[in-house]
Image (cartoon, rainbow, N blue to C red; front, side, top):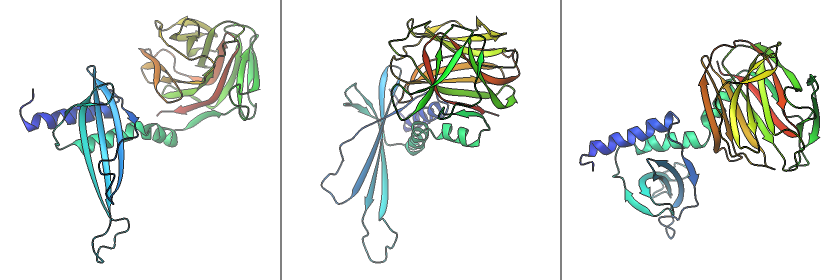
Length: 313
């Protein structure tokens, strides 16, 4: 057990750094009981939870807005005080042990808010160069590949929206759309996928980013096997780039994908509607350098929506 106050400060600093590096993922929970429900102070409580070494860690930030005390105090909204509480809790949220109130809790709280609000992703998108954006509300620029058929369809889960449907003929047949301009490594390909329980053909959902010769990188999701793997494309044909990992993707619900190609790494992740990671994997590979199109391959039928390719450089 730590005996010095500096040990607790160092522990909070470590939690902050792990959060900033994305090695510690927090989730927002609530609502939370007010500390002083009968007072005139306006209270707002934000509660976050993470798991480290098999233990639940809870962070609470309480903000109190107190009214003015005198006529000379003219700042609108009154005084604001914020208090932080870091604790170990059980699965039901019962406090097992509270950390001492030490320096650095405010910095940890700010890092957690930054992460859970998705500020980093928003900045990446706002500052990145968009190479392709397609919400499929119009059907433009798509070309069929080999014997593939792509159709613009009404979203099976929301009749007010549209999406792309891959149908007929298996991999590598499908379709493609050119990027606004060719790109080298250092980009992110994102979108959404949907497979229905009534699917009629091959089970693999396969997408890639390639050059004009259909050489590039992609991934495959086997809906029935519940697996995810990275692939290399050569002349459109797929070979394994990584071993498969478990991917418990939903059926009859949309889920997100993200394929990143950095200078030396290819990575893919899948997430549910809340942003929680379903599966992810990465592998070092720097062989392919030029890309100019996104390609829809795989089995049939499955649906693709909200496609985005952005430069990460």
